[in-house]
Image: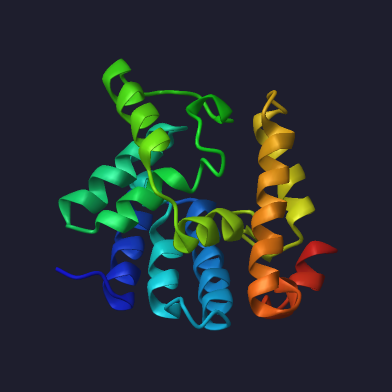
Length: 199
């Protein structure tokens, strides 16, 4: 079964019935940001980017978890043959390819931890990985926002572990890379970003 927009929408809608929460609204805004930015990049598919954004947190279907949602999402997608989407379920949380840069809690088995550690080290990131990493930081459940507002939102929930500022710097680098591709500000592609940031 090939991944497409309709299937991705159906999977997220079903996942929302299993574990309702703000993560689904966040996922929808991540997907829209991915779609809008990809549409401005000739080498990317807006529909593919939308699907990857929509399902990046799909592992949350299994319940309220921390880093376990990454491996749950990976397995969910691999079972359906969606290999790249499975990678993004893990890679979206690691813009720096080092498991030690995690901001969550490793509520996984030792075996799963070691698998994730090796997977992150060996993954080959492309612009879809980087786009979802970026858009994850541009979307609150209430809509699009400035990166800095999302940075604070995450810091308030997770604290400020040692690698937090390095993660921020990497995200800002990715933003600059995409702005070079589109020759302009990403925020012009995110409707309502001003209102949602300053509400």
